Image 1 (cartoon, helix red, strand yellow):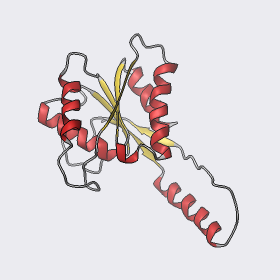
Image 2 (cartoon, rainbow, N blue to C red):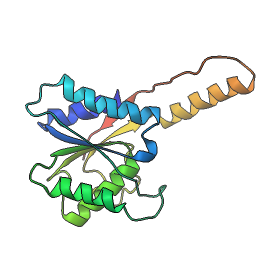
Image 3 (cartoon, rainbow, N blue to C red):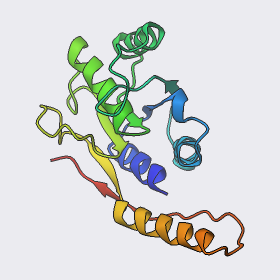
Image 4 (cartoon, helix red, strand yellow):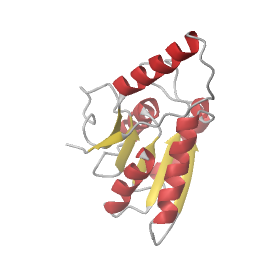
Length: 178
């Protein structure tokens, strides 16, 4: 899936210390569970000299998230991780809201993408006028296809058709940094 593709991209650049940043708000949602599993699977499928599995959960900020400061514990954990001697050389983010939160923290502490840390995420953040807008890889999802498939399934339910729950997986496309 998409998470494995993003991880393979980061691994192909030579990164072995790759953190996965996700959010507790989304951790029980199937696509987010799949992304975390893809992160773990990619690290076990590729022979890396130092398997570095760090999964961090932060409350996201951004245009669709509450306009509140990052949780103090989240911030402290991220600061410890990204200012320490064993900091990740790359990060795989669960979605655009988590990515924006992380990039805001990077701006504060002087971590530059891609010079200091490589980044790959789902859903390119909407803020294209920022200095980091196109400095990392992102997985583009087929939003039109998602809407089409969801509407089709909904219409079938409205018509009274009985069918088991279906899992629809649409392909993603890895967009490379500029």
